[in-house]
Length: 345
Ligand SMILES: [Zn+2]
Image 1: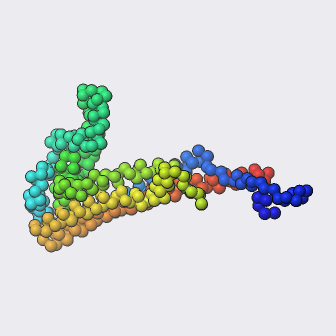
Image 2: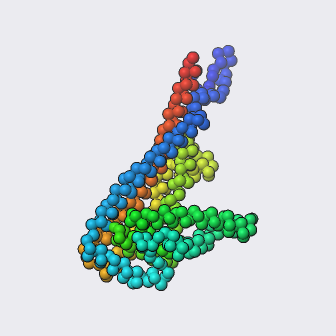
Image 3: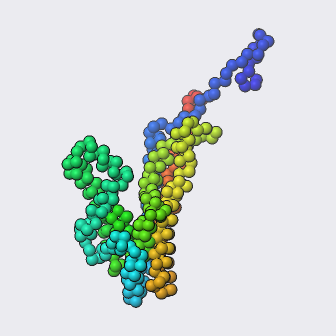
């Protein structure tokens, strides 16, 4: 008998009826999906740990080794280079200040640069809207005493964390918020100064690199924003079509989560490379060929810390998606088997 057509032996006329598909596909329950999502989060956290260990720590160790290998003559040459590049680049005229975290305490630094940082945040387009909203809703006094005081505390805490890393000589940074460069002169990060000045030039010149400065912050939170979609969205079954624009977008995000994560790191990778190129080019006039070689080696390894973080973050999001899907599929198969058992019994 062909499917969908039934021949009645009494009446010699074909009769048609609709074949009801057998319901054999059972989606995971909420608890099972929850376990799947939790497994994905664990995979993401695990890969983050791996990122710190391999993607960041190994190249960072190499950076520190290069910095520590400098002899007294090289240290003197790099110190002089810092002063020369600072003058030549015109950063002083643009209000960029350099702080030696080995000499200046955080409290002193914050006292001198807090006002600029606070103003930068308050004037930013996103925060400005919030500030305006709170001012209008609660009045100027409550805004200043409660809300502004709160985000100032958060800002101060973030700066303090970065500054403490600089005191230890593990990092140097340029902050666009208050136009300052922070490093420890008596640490391997001395070599990093031309690179930090490269960042400062990129930011203070009103070009595409200034825009990348803002875009590169995307790499910090976009993967975290994408993660709920990647974990909560169910993988399309074979032949299953998307329905509506929201489904299309979330399916696209899920299917391309690794590539999209890497894309969010691209502005950072480009801007970091550009800062190193600028710093190296400005130093060529003041450093010997041998020292320029050391500078390039230092910057190449430093750039690899960012590339490593980007690659492993992308793999982490992909892994989180795959683990969640595998868990959900496992429960789906388990549920289907239960249903089939029930049908046979
Ligand atoms: Zn940098």
